[in-house]
Amino acid sequence: SQELEQSPQSLIVQEGKNLTINCTSSKTLYGLYWYKQKYGEGLIFLMMLQKGGEEKSHEKITAKLDEKKQQSSLHITASQPSHAGIYLCGADNSNSGYALNFGKGTSLLVTP
Amino acid sequence: DTEVTQTPKHLVMGMTNKKSLKCEQHMGHRAMYWYKQKAKKPPELMFVYSYEKLSINESVPSRFSPECPNSSLLNLHLHALQPEDSALYLCASSQDIGTGQAYEQYFGPGTRLTVT
Image 1 (tube, rainbow over the protein chains, first blue to last red):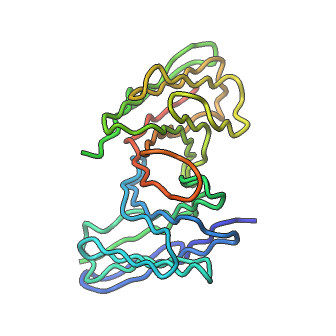
Image 2 (image 1 turned 120 degrees about the vertical axis):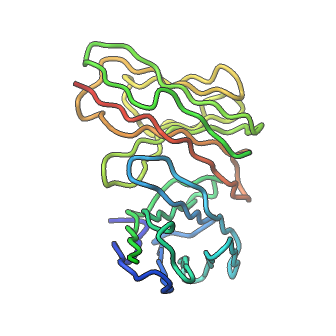
């Protein structure tokens, strides 16, 4: 079974709209990472969350961690074509200090 | 600067070849990682190095041999690979590993490997 579930699997939004991507872990979360990936390229670090209730923002992207529910959400406000790509969440489920498991990713397309 | 560089960008090799992938970071990070990513799949952890010593080997076949010559460099030596080993190989680094704290992990652009 998948230890890290991401939803939705894919998303098509109109430019300017807001969107949310969710990541739920079946195991205890010691750290939660969000990355963006263009097809065939490396992962671009977005944010890392460690403490329950923690919320971080960078430009128009906000990520939150609900430690009790073992889940995180990534919210993009006023989406732009530059936000298009695959968003991956990674989890530290073993208190090791790095991302051991990744979700399957959410493919985002932003249309004009 | 949060840059991790990887060479080569693309590599095509036969099943009898020996080749190496290289990774470099100059952020003073003491932990470095190799991940493998098949098409349309999430990355899978292969190896973790901490302070130039192999810390984790996720049951990777011996045809993959990692090496950490110094704190800035990480190599992955490849020998007698199979076509199913074709994938994007990603290197990452972080300040450290260990319990009690998560560290930001930065990834390189990857090496696209094709085994013929």
